[in-house]
Structure formats: structure tokens, C-alpha cells
Image (tube, rainbow, N blue to C red):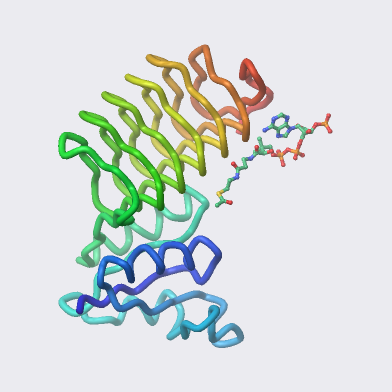
Length: 207
Ligand SMILES: CC(=O)SCCNC(=O)CCNC(=O)[C@H](O)C(C)(C)COP(=O)(O)OP(=O)(O)OC[C@H]1O[C@@H](n2cnc3c(N)ncnc32)[C@H](O)[C@@H]1OP(=O)(O)O
């Protein structure tokens, strides 16, 4: 059995562990709240981030269960530089086209769909029931929240967060480090470093 060390003993971590166990991994958690927090449900937390860095890279692969895109990026980059394998994890109930491409550290949650020729970069979260239609390009360290839907040929810049249930019309471009609020309907391009929401989505502030 392959061992997976999960950084982040969070709700997100619980779902990630569930995905990984279905794929046959044995999981253990690491979190900087250790030792004051030593368990997560029935799992044990075995140490802090620094403890995780001491693990044998041949024995352990690593996943980062941190929802904040910037923090997840920073942790994954450190782990990658230190030689840890950051697997792509795809829940057994998700549908991912054989023509789609996903980069290291990306996790696809239950019921998500990634269709033909879509690309998802490094360290992404494709959350439960999210849809990434054909030819979309989602750059590194994005989070597509539960039930969000990108129609065909949508572009999402790095570090952006598409909120729960949001829908993005085909061909739309969303910039880097932008937040699309929950329940939005995006019908016009949205620039980088902003928060936008509503139906139709409009920019409400810089993020
Ligand atoms: C498994 C998981 O749980 S994954 C996590 C999924 N979570 C999400 O998708 C949440 C995405 N986040 C949001 O939608 C947030 O509301 C954000 C980021 C857009 C804004 O958050 P904040 O900056 O904290 O805004 P705040 O909650 O203070 O609201 C400010 C105003 O905007 C309004 N507002 C906030 N979000 C939205 C939204 N998505 N759509 C419409 N209006 C909104 C609020 O009603 C409030 O209006 P008011 O000033 O008239 O009272």
C-alpha cells in the first residue's frame, strides 16, 4: 500500500483522505496544530509540517489539504522542491476524460466531471460535482468549488477560486488570483486580482 501524508487536518482533509483511501492509499495527517490537536475523526495526526518534511520520500507521497490557494501553493512548491511526489488524486466516482490533462497535486473530488481536452494545472481542487467542460484551461493552484460549472473553452488564471454553484459561460476568461463568489453567473471576462459575484457577475472589489 502506498502511504500518503496529508498536510492539513481540516474538513477538506477528511474528504481528501476518503478519496485517497478508496484509491488504496494508507493515510496519515500532519498539521501545525499538533500536538494540541492529535486526532481528526478516527485518524491520528502524526506531527507538524516540519515533521512531515522528515518523512522518507521513497515511502511517502504527499497531498496538501489546504483550501487557501496561496498557502496551498506555497506548501506544494516547498514539498516539490524537496523531492516529494505529489500525486494526482481522482475520486473513483469522478469522470475524467482520457483526453484531459491534470498536473501534480491536483485532487478531483466525488462526482466531478472533467471533459475532453480540458487542462487543470498543478495543485488544483476540483471539488465535489464541479464540471470542467471540453477545452477549458485552468491554471495552477485554482479551486473550483462544489457544483461550479465551467462551460467549454473557459480559461481560469492561476490561484483563482470559483465559488460554489457558480456557472461560467463558454469562452469566458477569468484572471489570476480572482474570486468568483458563490452562485454567480459569469457572462463577461473577469480580470485578475478581483472579487466578482452576482448574476450576471460584476467586479465588486480588488482581492
Ligand atoms: C466544500 C466547501 O465548503 S468548498 C467552499 C465553497 N465556498 C464558497 O464557494 C464560498 C465563496 N465565497 C463567497 O461567495 C464569499 O461570499 C465572497 C468571497 C464572494 C465574499 O466574501 P466576503 O468578502 O467575506 O463578503 P461578505 O460575506 O462580508 O459580504 C459582503 C456583501 O456581499 C454580499 N455577498 C457576498 N457573497 C455574495 C455572493 N456570492 N453573491 C451575492 N452577494 C454576495 C453579502 O450579502 C454582503 O452584502 P451586504 O453588504 O449588502 O450585506
